[in-house]
Length: 216
Image 1 (tube, rainbow, N blue to C red):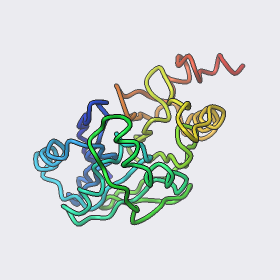
Image 2 (cartoon, rainbow, N blue to C red; image 1 turned 60 degrees about the vertical axis):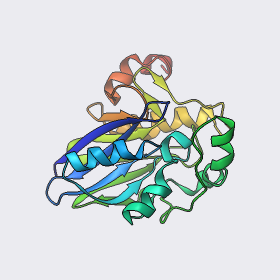
Image 3 (tube, rainbow, N blue to C red; image 1 turned 120 degrees about the horizontal axis):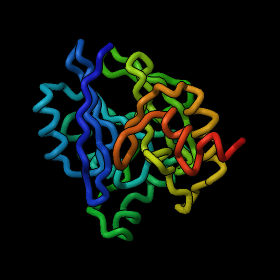
Image 4 (spheres, rainbow, N blue to C red; image 1 turned 180 degrees about the vertical axis):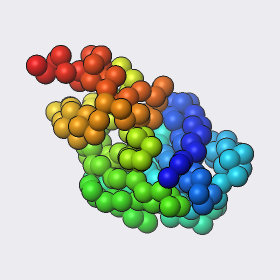
């Protein structure tokens, strides 16, 4: 099942929002819409896609602050993250105010996700992998046929997610990366929440935080 993907950097944090389209059906999902709604919708229109849902990796404002507005505007459901991130989404107005970020109301996803579940975009299926550490309810979306994953802020090219936020846990994050993501295969390409893409193999070899050489 072939996917078309457009990455739309949004918010002052340059967060990688993705529009993911199932080529067979034209149906699409918006992954992590943190803001800049008009930019996202312009990408949807350019792809000639029909948005059927919003997918969230986690509840930080730069990844989810525009979700509820888009849900109401497009009349589509929000799926994700895992319910451990309710803490973050419930306090969204406070986090936005503290960070001088555009206001966003708290919201309730239509579906909290669990490890091992599946989400669909058109005919495409994505595996849900619960990867706590950056936040307690962080999930990763894996499209096995195209060997492509959306990892949010779990891992980046040459770095890993921060764990100094409330409810972050460094040991959990390292475990998520090395025990849940790396075993999926060196050839899995990933789109992180910020910065350029990479592969799990490249990060296993050279990422200074989680490379094999650090763990014997």
